[in-house]
Image (cartoon, rainbow, N blue to C red; front, side, top):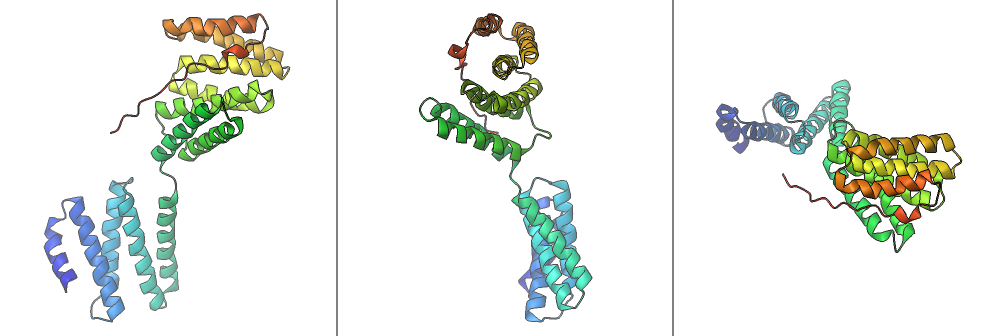
Length: 273
């Protein structure tokens, strides 16, 4: 058959992954042909060999979704073969491996969810002055996208952008007299901006959480946040310090500081790699 000829030609070339993938496909297809058409030959042997190659490819290329998808198909086909032979235990084991691979493929891609989170945050900033309800929904969509991306092994951009989304919603809620919901968001924003190493964002987090603490009647926490802001300002770029010194003075004077609700909106160019 054509599959047998493909296997003969590909077997000496399997030093490269792309040829290994083609060899695994050919072995899987030959096994399926043998099984479906009732031809002579050991379908199980070819399925087992396709699975071994697929496992090797996915182990060495953990982010390659094509390899995982094809390996799941090999396990699925093998499970059908086992079931036809009344080998229920083996059929179930291979079926479970196929399901696990398919479920892994259904999980959101972290890098994609991170950028979706950023886009929702930007939409929230655009809408906030004209439609608060829509802006709030965008901020919440942003936060959910960042949570789906997961914080493990993420880079500085993730923590910076996630922190900004949390801070934007927390700041808006504080200004709309909802400090109870704002405070945990701002606390989490502080954690992410500390990991990102962004003193500028961190300073604004301390300012807005100080205001939220004050509105919630948590005076000692408000004083501590003001002290943290004061300590952070020297780490901010010189050009940005006057912008932050004014709200710090407002906190110290215990006056309404809503005039500083619109901190500088930073626009990030996305580098394509």
